[in-house]
Image (cartoon, rainbow, N blue to C red; front, top):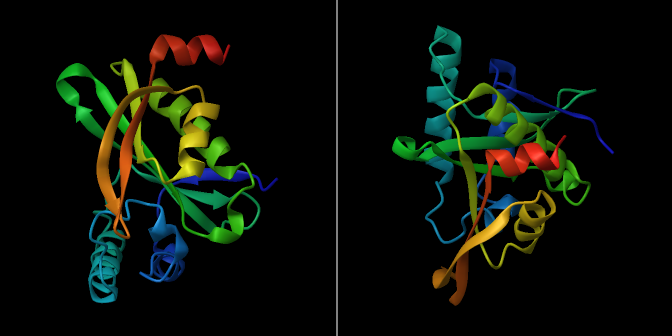
Length: 182
């Protein structure tokens, strides 16, 4: 299996990051396909903002890139945001941009590293959640393989290509994660 690292986005990534995020990339079919995706023009504008921020040293993001540990090639990205900062509830996400790396266990390795890191760096977190849609079978399987528990199913909450799917939310408590990973 490909060895991976989690690292910040760097200026030299931008050409690859642009190519991997083009609207024609296959991952868009699974990564929130019920939301409006950015156009090529919007992507170019986002890349330009990233370039300016990275060049000026003002780029700030708590999300990290998934990269090949041997070649430094971009593979994907792990993300987090507060679902409820007031209750120390963090929501995470992952996307493997490059379909050449799909079905190799990279998502499992990257999300395990990410959850470990977030619990280690944020003492206040009591739970981490992950939400996807029932048509994203790989993400559902990944959440379950990581030991996250199905906590909510919102029936017929997402429409993809004219078909209704459920929104499914998984979660794990800090003490559950620590007990599983001793």
